Image (cartoon, rainbow, N blue to C red):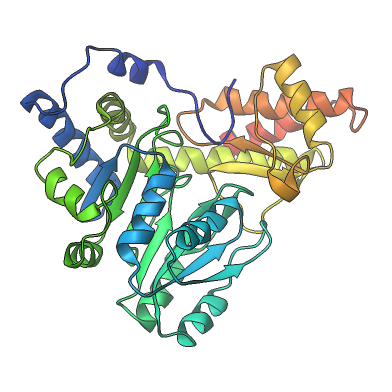
Length: 368
């Protein structure tokens, strides 16, 4: 049972959709598939423009940094992936300033406000919606609103790689929203997507930048249901199948079930003695702090067939993360917390009495 926060399991209906014959990307047949997938993606994003890139999410991060920063970037580092925005700026010699916090701490809106007020060169801000290194949720909607009130010309770029498809994101004040195929969209890695505001499109088209990640070129082509370079045809077919499934379920129902699964998992783990790590947990995953992370994860995988993620860098061996993205069944999430309680018993930390499963069921089904 794969419950890591990406890659997530690829459901059978998506695998079947991608197993058909390969289609050449410069054909009317593929253009029709591209158009259908693009329209579904526009509906999910609720933004004026959307792009699909044959890359990982990091490629989309790079594209947004290089295409939307003219003077200076403000990067928010509350984890491994916020840190990455700064590294991209550095790689391209783009001037930037970084606000850094511990991985359990969301960025302060006041710190962002003061940084922008004190530096008129900042014309783009880069931040995660969910920082998956610690399972943290930044208050992107409030931050974006504050930034736009200070200066509506500043581009607000949000990494929604572990947020889009998990929860409804208010994109009113967001100029670029990034995601990737291997998270909530339950596909193999290799496809990145970017939702764009009208203001972002204008800025991109005013000064085209780069070659492969030239977003002006992609906007021009994708409006005609093709791509500037070779499209990730199989993944786009799979994405179309996933988005159709999401629409059948109802985007609102999908978000509601994911939030409920996250809450039930968190309450179950707290009930058996764990501390939730981030101060503002995201719905994409449950992250707990424990010095026994490695031992717990090893037994979960080898004995109970539950594969979850640990921590990185200074949190290696200190946290574990249980994924909630995608179409995870309630009984799968319930088994994960039940198995975790069994592991605690095996390690002599807590006697098993079924508390985790009971609390999960009460929270998920009864709203207690």
